[in-house]
Image 1: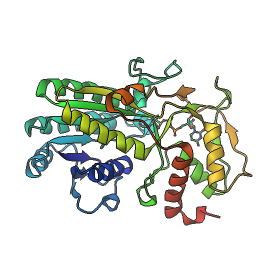
Image 2: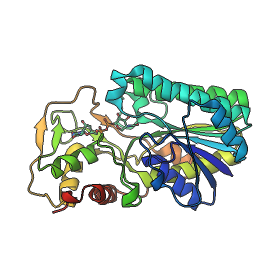
Image 3: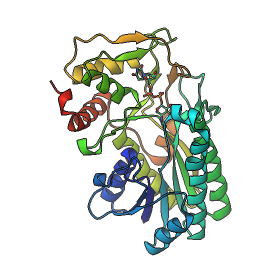
Image 4: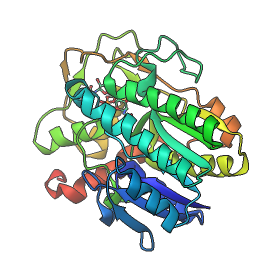
Length: 326
Ligand code: WQD
């Protein structure tokens, strides 16, 4: 099979490209390089620079490279920013997806894989979130991902595409330091950033109804997220009727306090005491995946643990911030 990976030069995209290529799939990347970096891509992978809003370009790439599947990862992904700039998020994430689907249908693509998010669930009031847990996104970002799933399902049905939507939980870690996330938008890099500046990590709220009072999340290694794409690509290749929506998590929670402790140890800052700050608006107490459906449908489970996530992310951080090491 041969795949167009949109957003393939980004943090998650580059890991997906690497794993698809390693699994023997032919890959072409489309990326506008707004936050991506073509230096992340392995040799032999063709890169086209351009926007997912450019339907003519998409159709040309799909036809010229004779691609038969699409992995659509390109998107804007900052929850807070999406509240400030909803029109931009709907344009990039919903109109961008619609354009990619339209070009895919026109070019006869029959396999479509879409990056969704646990953000579709909002504040789930359950111990383990299953794919049947009601979706109630709390940000324009989450809304664009839920609307995206609907669009993928409808277009898949109408145009004869096998589809899979992967709802990522909290992605962390890196396959190599060069592939690490360079954004400072999530817990792990935010703590690295504060330590690098000589400041204490901040914990947003310690009065949640959880075991240690801090929020619990399902952190999943980006390499496991990438291997889930390979498994899903295989599945939608084999099953032309597939219309899957799957959680991609470990099925295990970790608290903010526990993550911060692992980070401090990894960075050699065991003596530093985190500062407890007020709750951050909109944070649910617990968001932990049930990973059963992905196991059943894809024969996939996450293999990497919290320490590997934090240690590999730290190596990547230190590559760009050598002063962080002491
Ligand atoms: C995790 C926990 C914070 C920083 C977001 C999106 C979600 C998904 C992943 C894309 C929370 C706490 C954080 C800090 C802290 N993205 N925290 N101190 O909010 O679970 O999920 O990113 O699809 O859709 O919503 O991730 O990493 O921001 O926060 O205490 O310095 O860490 O309050 O409880 P979140 P996060």
